[in-house]
Length: 330
Image (cartoon, rainbow, N blue to C red; front, side, top):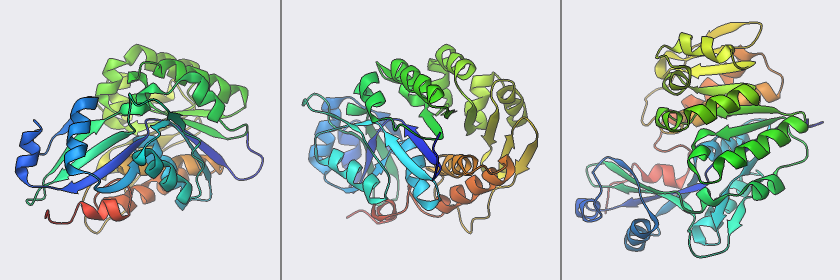
């Protein structure tokens, strides 16, 4: 457990978002469905990036976004993941350290995997088509993650998407055990319902053995619980963990610990532009509140405030890449 500034460590897939203005034929030429999100292999990712790069860049990945938002709180943040020894990897490390966050990411030295990236193609009609290549993120090994783990911290926050990687289950097991040995809490986000379905047994086992804090939207937690109602999902979560937060978009969130349960209204937003990354920001505020010893309702309110801060612009974080979503294509 940390002795001074509260400290949250995040573990997840390191990605860089690359936003590029293109004509519609670029989307169709690369076999992409306009407006869709596509998971692609290395060859397709390389061909697309060679044509449209370098683009406007911003570090991303779900838990990486959560840790990035720690810069807006009094809590210290550290991010653990893996990038390649390339230009995008430099972008990822530079942006995280530029926020005064530690990012002891492992670096893939061979040329087989580039840094994970999500290329966002913006056409003149404003449509956004996404092509995601996980790349080096999926090659993180348990020993690399363990070597990057700080000695003292309060919460380890794990991204469910890691279970989809070849060594992801081992990485999660290694760091969860280390967190428990260090006296830290383990928090988990299931990432999405599809991820839960692919890894249900492993995820439930981890919840039972290691997880103290469960955070996610009602669809994700519902998939884990086997129900589709937010309050029922919270009931299930509280039968498994000490603290839970179940978000429900504009309806706000339900938060609970052993002593209380609260409904936290969503923070007001003048105009919702894009919901991308709102859940990541909520998790940041909620975990920061818990790390500071706040009661769950106050931590939920902090999460709601940070979630609202990203709803008024495109992208999961503010900055040049987020603003680029709103630019007309050349």
